[in-house]
Image 1 (spheres, one colour):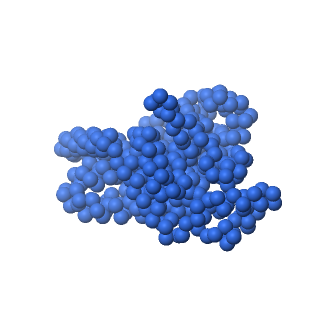
Image 2 (cartoon, rainbow, N blue to C red):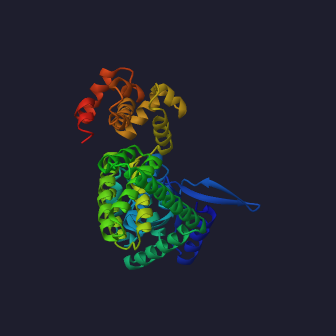
Image 3 (tube, rainbow, N blue to C red):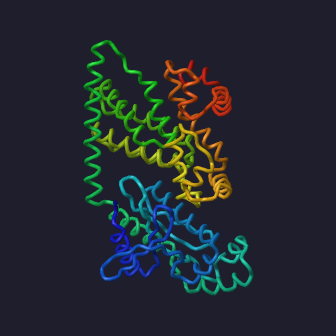
Length: 426
């Protein structure tokens, strides 16, 4: 994990050196500030920036959330394109952002701004503010406060963005992360080696490896956000690819690219934003060309899998991140049991009526629709085990009635459970 104190110290150095406002946000897009008392650091949330324009804008909770979402979206874009992302906030001010990564995950982001890139009298700020339904009185005050913001030429903003991204990259590269990555690398190599030994023994008994069926398993687990399960199957597939393709690195890369396409498709089917996945694919396909060993390819693919799995739960448009995350985590752990909306509402400390409304607004479907879809997703893997009767499959994923299970399955998948089983999920 990257130390917050180090991130804040670097951010302050950037501000002091460039004279440009900047702040740190966490993985949910919330501004963070450290307050030091007697050499003991205490982390608190800071809701409003230190400039008069944004203070007035963010007096409204709704507008404040819009700002947070814009900053978070910018950090995702910067991570996607691999460079600092310069953007206009919903109220016409210029920011640039660079993510601080813990492994392949965004832990914090450095956000610089707001600034303006044209003189106050030349900006289109009045038109933008009118579009955001601000009153004439608020617009008049904001236009005056605009003069207190730094005015920078576009070329200078670009240079400052490059500098910010370099600092974020420095913060992301900690000794702890490198040690953790090395440990993960050797764990994966050990897992692949043990599988290869087992496979060679089975091959001597005339047993073939069911590659097509195995390739479907990590896709299903990615759709459900199951990183550990997807990694386990992925190591098996990698072991087989290395065994069957020998030491031909270019041929192995071709097979890995095919897997990346399958994994990215699974992420999109699981609800990931398609533009983000396409952006990651472009970056990943560039990365693989520069890998020089089979071991590097294997470890790189596991990181790709984790990134795609993270994208399944896309936080960009979710305001109540903590509540939704806790809800989905609870449902994935308990989908096989009897679950009621009231029980889950109690778990996240909300009234059932408010929780039901909040869930539908955030997830664009009802609680029961989401739970049914989750259960059906888990049932697909069980259906491939032909020894399990349909009534048992229904029970194992939380449906009390087989006929209702079949009805929901056909509605969501397009075929009956029996047809899905006969086609082996194709």
